[in-house]
Length: 226
Image (tube, rainbow, N blue to C red; front, side, top):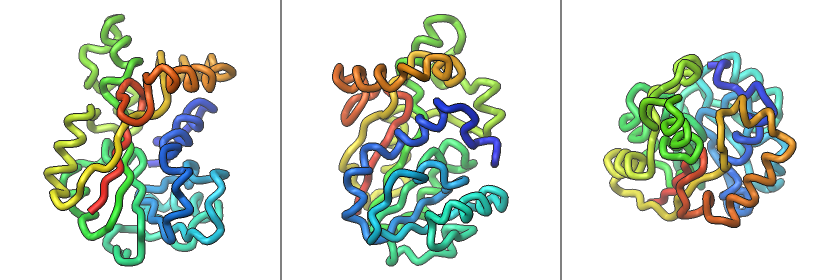
């Protein structure tokens, strides 16, 4: 849905940060398939290596048209089933699983691919635990009105995402996981401190509050491989 697209500068940063763990590795992949690419906002201005081919899957026609306008993707398919898994060395699944009705069945549709990089919102992030402590959330897994408005159906933690992956894709192994983007408030609250949010994120990484094998950040990521 177009409502899932970022509408503040901070949300745009949040989306960019989702792929920071793999940006240094992009030149090792010949062809990447970005499943659920939306408007193409995540990969826009990242600096894709010129010998890396980017394709995408986006079922929403409005978002698909916007993604086509970015000229990032050589091809954009409507469904995963329209692609040939043998053609891709990496699949990115960025903020998609929390939107689908059946996450296990959706992941099963990717079983023929070689390597997958997954991001989802982290239920046990620092800012959501603060929300519980402050009485703003009943539990870290509670869906807010904003979550429902943008189509979130669930939150994951490290263990639940791992279980989902292992159930749907038993032939894959998890080769890296962690979190990105340190937040101490909601997206709207973070937008108010946008000028120094990058400093918070940098200090949080230095203190091991987010990053590889650290699970306090706003977005969980798992990199899995056959």
